[in-house]
Amino acid sequence: MAVHVLLFDAGSENEGIHSLELNGTTVVLLFEERDDAERYAGLLEAQDFPLPTVEALDRAEMEEFCSSAGYEARFVPAGFLPQSPEERLLIAPPEKNMDVSTWREQDQPEPTAVAEEPISSGNSELEAFRRRLEGLL
Image (tube, rainbow, N blue to C red; front, top):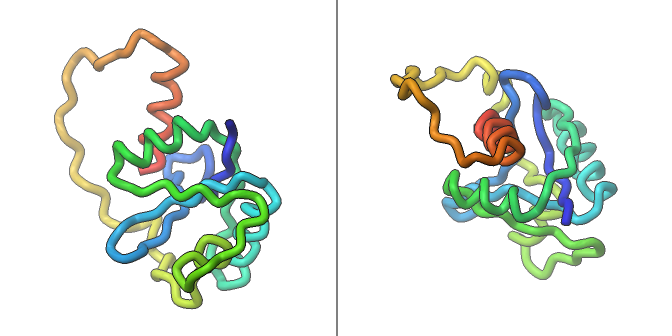
């Protein structure tokens, strides 16, 4: 099943995924409906956030990516109605956001030595997707 996520600078070296900080946990929103993701992106832009791109990705692969990165994947179903202030953040961004004016220039971690032979799962499609998701970090 495909879900829709918000990406910044999609396809570039600086690609990043939109996330929220909720109670000390980094949460990535997985929208069932493209329209809901596009509306959320528009709300971010209205808050002077850079406009993200809405991308459809496989839900299971996104949940696996989030889990391996220490993030929490939150599925936002079609017609979702929040029952708490925290759940409201799943359909509308918070009024206060982190400063994103320098997110592209933030200090990058020092590169580490890489083994001569990369570890391969033998599935080239899976490897290509893994590299794409690692680029989001």
